[in-house]
Image 1 (tube, rainbow, N blue to C red):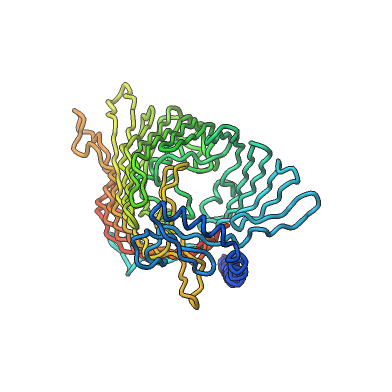
Image 2: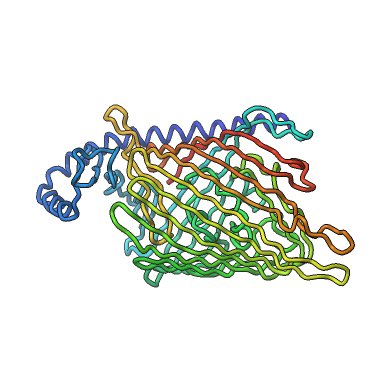
Length: 508
């Protein structure tokens, strides 16, 4: 066992060192290449005049920084990475093409892609790698259960193979991160049709987006993990890998999606209500205000599960982090007689220049059937979060209409010798999950009829630094306070904990 753990640590260190080497190599090579491209493009004066006219009409200005350019409001005295409303890096892979048999090898946004001569067939390979580390600040042996310690592990080790022929796209994504070991190391495997304008129809193992925070890509999260309430909602009928059939469509100022879902893949989801489950996910959003300085997002999300193999269901919440999966501070335990589960709640997002505010609130309702022996009341559990994000330098978060989310900041390619530092943002989040309901309810015979799962409050703050579009470093501080959770050995009478987490991320 010790030999296995030591070997695993050696393998993890090798993988991290290898990827860091790739990141540095790509960055250094791209800086030199960008200078050559810039020299060539400065000769295109007529194009620059046209761009200047367009910027003037929009009330904007542009500053060329050698490997791309910043766009700022025309009222700014100078245009730098500190006040840019947009950062455009030169496509360092543009024009790179190699012939392999009857296919052309290209690199759109750094992703290796094979394209047939008639452009009908495309084969691409992508990657997401997350290595997470974290630890509690000081030991916590309260009530005999130790939650001290630290650890590091591969959160995601995902490869994505995409094969597109005309309007059909086949996607297969194995994942060798720790979480996916119970799902046969498979994140998704599905077939999509994109023949209708701004519409994606999908069938297969897929993750339907069940909320605003859930709709964000893992490579662009404000924090390493989603809030506890979002995880609880997505586990009703979303999450990955999930049998799914449905569609998403968006227009100029709206987005709507609906999916019918089945059972999740993996032994952990083949029990109680979740086994042979039938459910669905619905989400709709509008974008009523969209200006250079302001974006307003309004939306609503709902999930439901109508059928499972039996009537047992439970909800638990981690500390807004995945490092200690077994140490859950709040949980309902197994609830009997559950007939169906649904959730519903509003979502709102607001951007003003470089700052973003975002919040969601959800109510999870469990409908229960009474038996001949006892009356079983329905239960409601609530949760919400509010987060703020501020881009210190680089392009601030921008609104993505197709997914109805705010995308992560973008900055110039890291080159300290020239004063280019990528993108840096600061984030703060307050979240709460309440798994208490009917805590003072008793039957006529004196039997407790409520749920005392506990209430968890989290305060999280941190910074995200992106030296390039392929690399990201995250550092976070967490403060958690949870009230007592009945029958939960890790939190019988309440806990308060502090811990720090960090993530090293590579993607293309």
